[in-house]
Image (cartoon, rainbow, N blue to C red; front, side, top):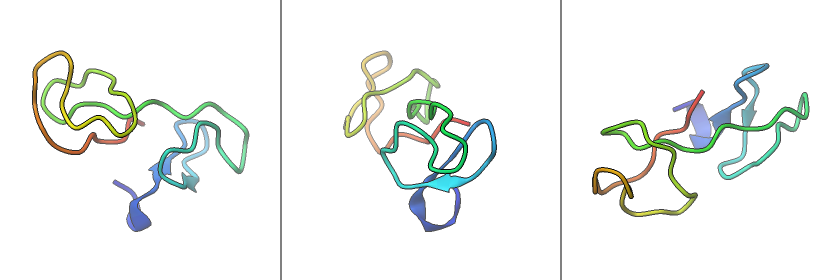
Length: 62
């Protein structure tokens, strides 16, 4: 995870606020968070993965 807890833009690597849907620098779409166990895309704020049931905070994708 980038310093400060934000997510890095997959296009330009700018760190954006957690939960941002688009990059503040380039306007690119931010990737959804992923399960730390299986890598499945997770809904923002989800406490458990719908695929494997792993609990915990999602890892940002990108």
